[in-house]
Image (cartoon, rainbow over all chains, first blue to last red; front, side, top):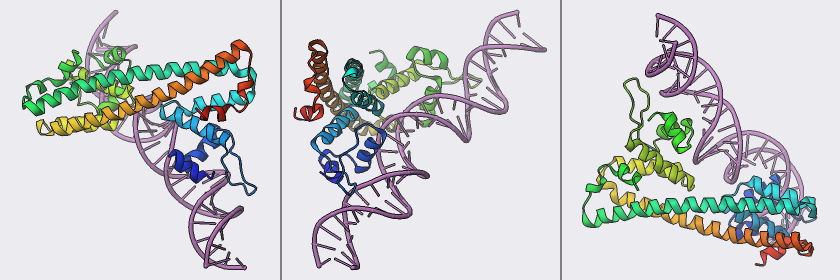
Length: 134
Length: 134
DNA sequence: TCTTGACTTGGAGTTGACTCAAAGATGTAT
DNA sequence: ATACATCTTTGAGTCAACTCCAAGTCAAGA
């Protein structure tokens, strides 16, 4: 698979795919005799992992660390386990944060809906103080 | 409340509080006669909103847009409703993404646990291809 | 073979969100 | 009244994660 095909299939700019490889977020991609990238299943697996992690907001640094450990072999399995477990906690925190914000957003949205339907805008006065109280 | 007190209470650097105000993510804060910030309940309400939104990952630009509309008065209520509703969708997407990554992480973590306890590392071979298949 | 388009690298530029520094004003405790 | 901490602004610097550019190489079609 060419870089363009991977780029289109996973909706990641080709420049970003090269960037990931350059900084070591994914291993060096298989090349043709002429030096052109020819992604194999294994290469694509790493691209998928990178996309997954990044779209959840995990930093590239984590991918680099994971790959570094991976390349060092089986002795780093406990370290990789710790790394993934720590990132799992980060994501759980992030999800809690999102849920909190969603609740606040839903409250505000509900208020706006009432205001728009009922035409009652009195609640707007001192809008922020009201919200902070809840 | 001084900027330092707000900074400590909400765990936001004073520089960041000034930055939010400077770019218009929160309205101008109440000042003392001497020009020093003296946060009132309403000011704090906006700080809380900013913190909530930012920690969920929503861009500052959204806060700026919301505040801009807010300052324009009641006629922008439908626009504010739309803005909040759109951001709600963004957060729901983000949460879906996090859940997907958590599933992948949990799978990997489970594999590492088995490898560490059982000492069976054979699954490591061709690690990535295996994972992409699931 | 020649053209054309996609690919290559290395390095510079951009964006968003802070973060820091300098120089000066304010406010409080002695 | 005088230190001294804390505040002020303006503007520059930093960092992560891309994103773009230039100059050149590779490969498929006429």
